[in-house]
Figure 1 (spheres, one colour):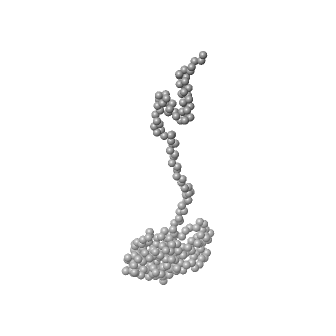
Figure 2 (cartoon, rainbow, N blue to C red):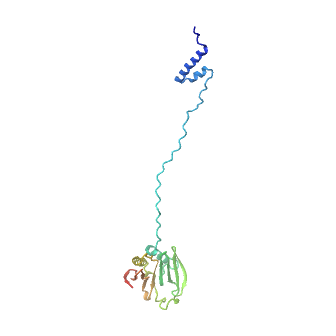
Figure 3 (cartoon, rainbow, N blue to C red):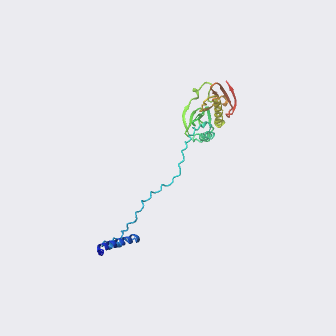
Length: 235
């Protein structure tokens, strides 16, 4: 004779059935309460949040390859007519010289770095001569000049002329002609660094240098009073 199932077995079967229902319906809380262990409500345990995404690095425009900076060549003021004319105007506007007739004694020297040196007869004392120097955009009065210390062929009367008769525009013309001959005769060609004008007897202007020594040949240039090239001859 079969014995009826025990209460414990019935209870276990009931639990299994309820567990299946709980899993299927998501009612796990019901099983726990049946066992006398109420399940506490989820304390807002948010679902595992994904770790914060790293900030996306802003897309940067490609950096262009650096181009080498072109280093400009030194500006040779012998070829800068505007600079030379401005220097002359600044000389004529000096307080001690403004409005005066200016007279140059013997020579004016021009340099590639912008310096200009000349000797002027004092407008107030015609027997006095003073040197003037232009550098870094300014004129300054230099030392007195004694004309008697020059060669016998050079005197204040024979070797002077008005500043107005000397064309500062002539300097670039002379420098250009000299440079062209250097480029043709020298390898490598040296750059013209000094141009000057000498006042000879009767106020005649002679632009110098008038020679170019090449690697194999030398030439002599002839300039007029305005610095225009009149001829080239081989020596």
